[in-house]
Length: 204
Length: 233
Image 1 (tube, rainbow over the protein chains, first blue to last red):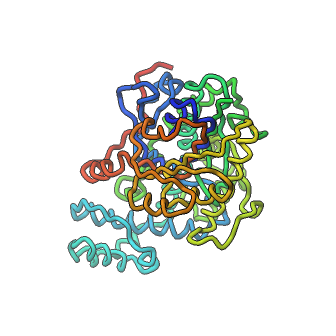
Image 2 (tube, rainbow over the protein chains, first blue to last red):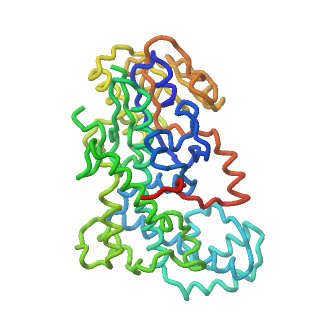
Image 3 (cartoon, chains in turn blue, orange):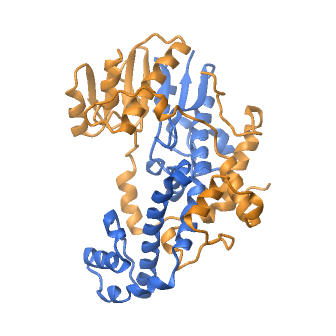
């Protein structure tokens, strides 16, 4: 999209609001010219600083909305923490039994039930040993506050990571466009619509 | 358009953008163990930092919001939270209740309606700002054509590009939209018209490597962070 704007003089204005940074190309070790390059880094400015690529985990994290980490979203945060907590305790069982299983999505309603029901659901879905269900009481040995801390601290990194991605794209356009205007503008209220940065470029 | 072209957080300015990017990279380097940590491993591998207190949710959110003095936090945590709060780009979009959002559109969630209305208003304002007269728009990654339809209603002449054939077919049913079903693999794939036009994309998700990544993810997980060439500071 950005490259399209750069390469075609008839495109007078670019307004690009991205999303799902986790689905962009991660970048490669071998740099190519901006026109043929990968999604990150796109700019010479970033490459000259030694930046080479961004992992899938980081790009995934960059999509999160930090603005929703407020007291107004307390209930939402508690629910999410509960999900992380259940999954983390389940991981203890997996490690204990030498299971390397991808759990995948579980309906939200399952997390409203006691942990043993969550384990039962996962066991049934993946055909795992029922002994996991019998050991579900290990949850009493763990605290949701640990899962909450890891979830929130990780999520707080999102703003910086998104800034890296967006600024890199903007700098790439600036490098490739002679004259005109290139800027970054926040189009949307973040709580309503996260990932609202628009790269705006005009040839005039 | 009164906002600065680059919305850097204070004290950074366009003249010190290099220092700003260094600060972003420095944050990533210092806290990459946190950013790359998988929450489900917190009890099996332990959290990568030992200064994360066990607060309840209410307390955490108060700290994150800045409602509590940094002095009451462990120093490493205070530093992390200050940087995480102060380093990202600064920008504020129009509040939901300040935008006249058209209601009663079929299949439009409030979020989608808000995004489309703000986006189109922005395109109009930006075109006027830069004296761009063309009303021809190329909507890249048009999906089911929601944005394209609204652009047509707003008086634009729309060519929509969508890689999914079913979605493209749906978009093509809408009056006034020329929809081209093609995956965009290179800029030349967007070489749709030689006429002056605007290029817009709203929430386009690049699918180029998505299925490939899914397969890779199942066989191994990469935990690479930002990679840097060996460099000396």
